[in-house]
Image 1 (cartoon, rainbow, N blue to C red):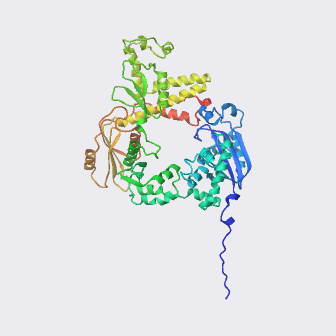
Image 2: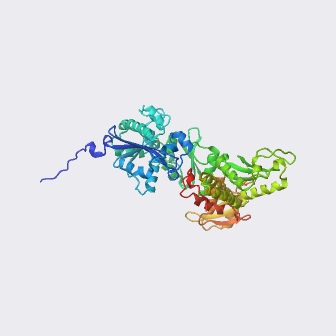
Image 3: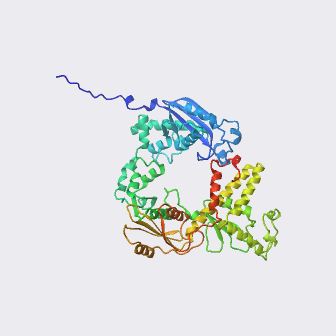
Length: 579
């Protein structure tokens, strides 16, 4: 009998993937007017095409961003408005770049940044986004190099370590050339990691790090319930705090290939244990996370670490009140507007208020018995000059009342005054000044709307609400002065009155405090508000009424947001009035 026998033959390396020496790479770099592809523009593009370690082509051009380059960007890159005034726009450069990279593998240092701008430009001009494979030299360096070899994976650091022939200097072609040298140095190391083909290179970057694989056991004892998790180092210091509706699933994800954030992978290398706090509901977990981050300030968390650094605009409590930027809310009779994320935002809101209300802008403390000469603001009608006695305390008090009302109840006078100034500036073609006024008005309106929304809950001594729980029953929360005081899940079929009474009786006692957020951070109260406004939530009981001011800033915020749609910041040509 004759039988056909299949003989197994080992394939050649060429059949297992594209050898790295045969891959054509295009290493590119962009300079831009800022960090957001949706809001900023490209100012320069540089690209180097290489194969087998040899340069086979280069491309470089300045790009007209369509608006002014911010001064701090010009200082960083050396690219000025004068340099790009005769440069082609991205609509002309993009087709050439896409043709240059056709059929190649793209390489960039911190590739998501550069690819984000390329994809945004393609979308804006009707091109499909590049389907090229993408290699990030920053990711490769983090996988291949240890902290003993390099202190960080910045391009300047790697170029120095690998003795690049070109020093990166925030110019596109120079940085692309330096990145090319870094790429070649990293590819030389790739063989020691078993990486010989493009396919292996891509999977190598996506694979879990050895530290992630080694520490998977940290998730073994984590329960599959809602709560908060804390990664801790060997001394028990929190490294990272997070929340989840299923702690086991979330914590396990940190030890898989899906976790690609560089700082989190670094954190996993330091972590020695995972501590969990089981919570009754998702809202309780969200609130506990915020409180823990603010209290422990884990170095690998980016948000919510410093709630105490919030900035407020204060209408001072004195005979002739003024608007002052402060970091502390006190138990006084002053009015407060905030919180602001930065002093600059608070200054913008103060300028908007001064446009409508002639409050004094000097900083010294005044009294009716102590006078001095008036400043220039009095001469141009921007201040009633209480300093030299032209305005009595009673007359000046009317301005202070208007300011308090604008901060807490009625945003219309400020909106109207700034809008009128913007229209006048636009008619005079002073677009940059009009854009600055638009930004100041936006800072005031958005912050006032947020504060008034928060106060609608923080002024309530107690509120109890419920929402359907997953699998039956009800999630019930007790909120006192904007702070979560208790949370529980009432089983299906249970009588609500005894359960609610017991939850209220054991809830945290919350004493009234000063300011618009007297008992909790603004972020915590916003979490509670989002839950209260979600579908299915029902009010169970409430002291006093839950309402917003009829003429508050919330009704104007939509007009502000609409004015910013499609507008790139720092472009004075688009500083048009609000409609």
